[in-house]
Length: 408
Figure 1 (cartoon, rainbow, N blue to C red):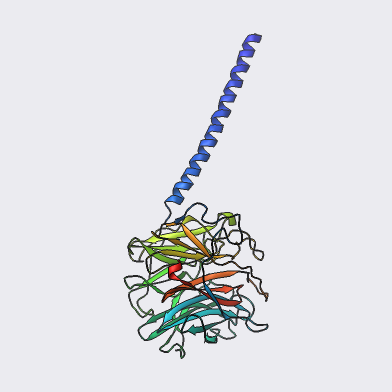
Figure 2: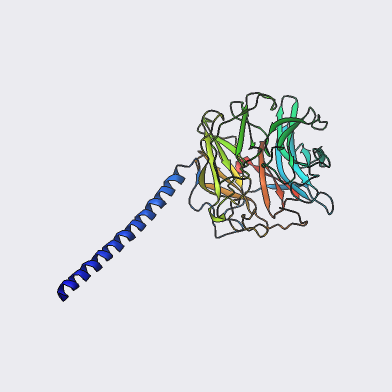
C-alpha cells in the first residue's frame, strides 16, 4: 500500500514537473515567436535604420558627427512682443528664399497668433520680418498657423491654416486658406482652399504632380491631397489612406521618393505609447500619390515631433528630425528636441548615415503654454549648392542652417 502511494506520488510529481517544463517551453518559444514576428514586421516596414545609427547612451549628440553649416537667426523674440514662433516653412521663388512662421503673443496656437515671413537673396542675409497674415478673425475664436509656399510661373502662393484656439485638428472649423503675390511683397486677400489642418505647403513630385499633406478636421487622421494643376490652387483631390486608430494625434506627414521615382514614402509622427517605443510610422504610394498603404511602425526613433523628409538632387533620401527619446525637461512624456539631425539613405529603404545639424543646449527666455526647449519642427529646401534647413528655437526664435550638398 505504501509502495503504491509512493509510486502514485512520484508519478504525480513527474507529471507536474513535465507540465511545468512544457509550459515554460511554451512561454519561451512564444516569446521567441513574438520577437521574431516583431522583427519581421519591422524588416518589412517601408523604411528602417541600421543598428545603432543613433547612440542612446549619448543624449547630446546621439554619437553622431556634426555636419558643417552656416547658421542664421532670422527672428529673435523680445520681451513683451510676440514671444512664440514655430511651424515654419521655407521655399524658393524667383531667385529668392522665403521663410514663413506662426507668431503668437505668448502661447502656442492661441487667439491673436499671426503669420510672419522674411526673404533672402543669398541665403545668408534676410529681410526684416513682415506680416503675411494677421489673426484670421481678429478678436474672434480663430488663430493662424503657417502652412507653406508654392511658386508657379510668376505667382507665389502662401498658405495658412485657421482654427479655434487649442483645437487644431479636432474641430470642423479647421480650414486652409491661401494668398497670392507676383512680387512676394503685395498679397491678395485670403481665400478658403480646403477643410483640415495643414502646416506644410505643396511639393512637386518628379513628374510634376503636387502633393499637400495635413490632417482631417477631426479625428487626427492624415489628409493627403494631390493635384495635376501647376498653380497649387485648383484641381485638388483627396488620396485614399487606411485609418489607423490609437497612433496619431498630429500625424504631420512628410515624404520622399525612391526606386526611380516609382514609389513615394510618407512619414508620420506617432503620438501614443511609451516614449521609449515611439517611432516614425511610414506608408507607401505606388500610383503617384492617389492611394497609400496602411501606415506602419518603423524602427526610426522619434521624440514625438514633426520630421521633414525629402530628396537631394542625386536622389538620396533624407529625414530631418529629433530622434532623441531622452525625456524633455518641460514635457517628460515627449523626447528632447535636441539634437536636430539628418539621416540619409541611398535606396530610400535603409538609412545608414546620419549627422547632427544643431546640438547646442538651449533654454527658453519666455514662458508660454506648450513651449519647449530645442531645435524643432524642421523644414528644408534645396537651393543652389546648399540644403537650407529652417527650424524654431525654443518655439520663440526662427533659425536657418545651410549645408553644402557635397558635404552630405
